[in-house]
Amino acid sequence: MRLDDLDPSRNTRDRGRGGSGGGGFSRGGLGGLIGLLPLLLGRRMGLGTIIIIVIIGYFLFSSGGLQMGEVTPTIQSGQASGVEQPCDTEAELFACRVLTSTEQTWTDLFRQNGSQYAPPTLNFYEGGTRSGCGAASASMGPFYCPADQGIYLDTSFFREMETQLGATGDFAQAYVIAHEVGHHVQYLTGQLRDVRSRQQAVGRVEGNRLEVRIELQADCYAGVWAARNRDRMEPGDMEEGMRAASAVGDDRLQRQAQGYVVPESFTHGTSEQRMRWLRRGMETGDPAACDTFATNRL
Image 1: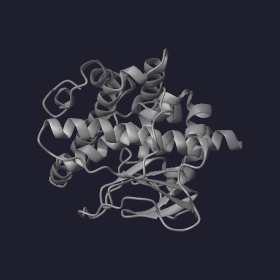
Image 2: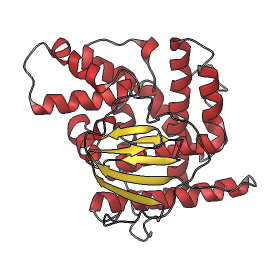
Image 3: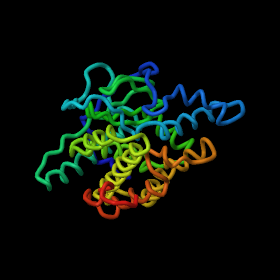
Image 4: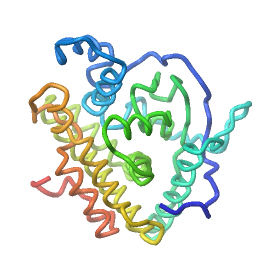
């Protein structure tokens, strides 16, 4: 994807290197996952095996790139003070340019609807940090925190996603960021608040189904961003995005981790669903086409 002509977004922070960050996955927990490793594998584990299970655990047990804290109207923008500078590595610079592109795209789309887009802050960190939603660690993968309207990213995740899940290419990385920005759009439009309220009134299975709709909509919003930047896409980019969406489907990850699937526990959607909604956004370029709550068939 051609983004070299874009200035890196200034809505970025580099929080530097931290500890483990405490915490864990918002569903299940990393500690519980590690405890399940011998049961899942039935053999001694090397580092590569542990890494892939941790990645699988992120997608299986996290709440879809969302960490829930108290939602407050606080926007942290601009660069953080201190010695750490964002966008100063190749991976960070690419992410910062992707963020710039999403800012341009969603500013235009919000303006067309007579509203103003307030961009999220992209927070880089290594190892662990604190977010408005609590502790964050690299094992959690990228996530969006509505409490401080921040996206949190340890860019080592991209390397692990590529080597362990086969989600290769720069567009696969851009898709991850655009998906998290999609959650921010959901926050700004009130969709997140509405869904969280509905989840509190239903059981776990129905709550998971609502979670799947939130995640698929974020995939579709990522596709809308891609469609609006089609002139920047290169041959093979769409295929990279589809491979990435397929790689993180609940059914594929559960089958890889435990040999069978439990649809009632899905929180992100199947590989087919994630690809289809990403494609829908890419084909239409219209956020209105991403209403996953208005259809019976996901």
